[in-house]
Length: 306
Image 1 (tube, one colour):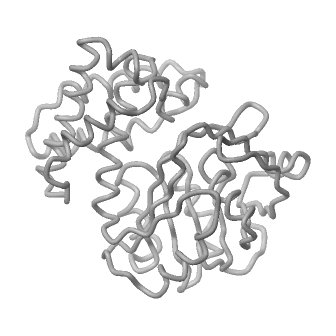
Image 2 (cartoon, rainbow, N blue to C red):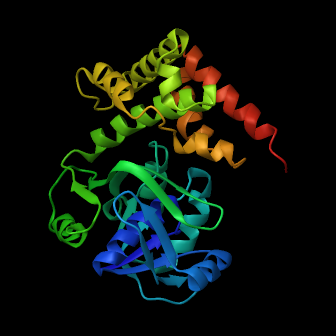
């Protein structure tokens, strides 16, 4: 299969790099500056699962290329509209679009733009960042990408994709309930990114402070209430399971949103929290903890240099 990875950043660079390392046909769609950087230095990945330096194929938006079998989109939410226009020329009726964005607000957009039949569900669990020299720094034991048909069916095409993804030095898992998996990830990342960005701290010190722990519980509980009001397929007992997970992750764990704040970059506040608060308003649900998280992010972004 011909695979197009949109961007060669922390997520796309890592998983695309692992596929390239295995020997799959991977091309990265990047900006001109990133293309020059990759041509000069290669795609450098420093990982607890093994370091590598690769020489990837790269194209820039508008460059001619045949349609791809798979397009992996791992951009930030605020880059989605640009990514859609960039990949459109490389999509055929048989192309599978595999998004790895957090949250859920992007799914109806992609379904509308490309047709629901082309769009898979996807998510990933990984702690990774791009450093100032363009190296992908991956630090977590978990490096998992989960994908599946939105319908939950096990189709021939996802079985072929599973075969392509197998044998890499990362975990690629085919899900038969990707919709539920995505909502569960949304719940987890809302809680983790919400509290770590609010307190400007890794999760460990927040957990061990009484009011920090209470804030974790409030953000988690409010998010569960909103999601259940929307009728999404959350598992029974998910709140306790997610709280256990937050308590078990590494003391120094930071969210990618928090890392973006530390770099003075834009954040995905609207995509994560603005979306949930809109739904809460529709359902007449009070969400003071989520509102505080969202206000914190909006104030932060308003103070960024323009």
